[in-house]
Amino acid sequence: MNTAVPTLCSDEYEVLAALVPLAGLRIVELGCGEARLVRGLLARHPDCRVTALEVDTVQHAKNLAAPAAGLTFVAAGAQAIPAPDASFDLALMLKSLHHVPLALMGQALDEAARVLVPGGHLYVSEPVYDGGLNDIVRLYNDEGRVRAAAQAAVDAALGRGWTEVATHRFAQPVHYADFADFERRMLRPSFATHTLDDTTVERVRAAFAPHCGPGGADFERPLLVRLLRRGPA
Image (cartoon, rainbow, N blue to C red; front, side):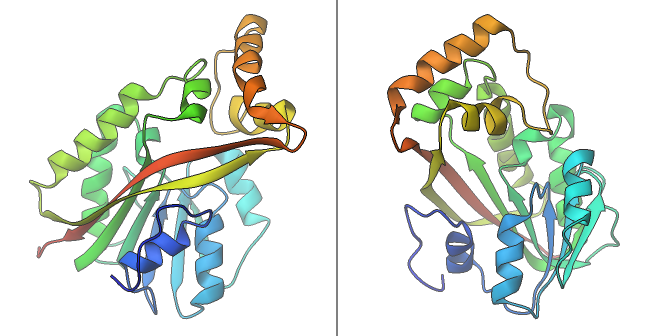
């Protein structure tokens, strides 16, 4: 480790940087969303190069409209990475493995191994099924099954050439200005279509209300990081 790994941090870059030396790396992010972390990483390490994959066409279009030096956006999923073997030194999955279809999680981890150099690292960060925010979200989107499946897929991958070199739990503070902000970001994101009716929305609103004051609502989202190293081919 480079420095002490934080247990509460708003910028996950701090956790990543404490676990992996980042200077000069070729990095692939699998399921990049807004690519917030890698944009910050490139600002600190302009000698890195990042290829960021995203399957959500709406978010991918937004990413293309906001280019950054050293950052290449690709419309693709983790289960079929459009890159040659041994193209990258580090692969990132930031809260994205549980979004891969269940039947393809193992394939996605095998693809990460394929595109990494021997000795390259895979950083998997997944939300823990616990906490006040999770209690609200599971009223309309219960991810207990897929989150458990993501961890099981990582466990299974350890028998296919990966070595687990570190695990770390931390919490990420999350703020919502009000319920409208929560609804926009969590109930109606572009990458998912949740089954919502008026009754469900009102149940979620009622569960959110006790957490919300004049300054908004604050939560801590627990996360588990598993850092894997690719073995020799």
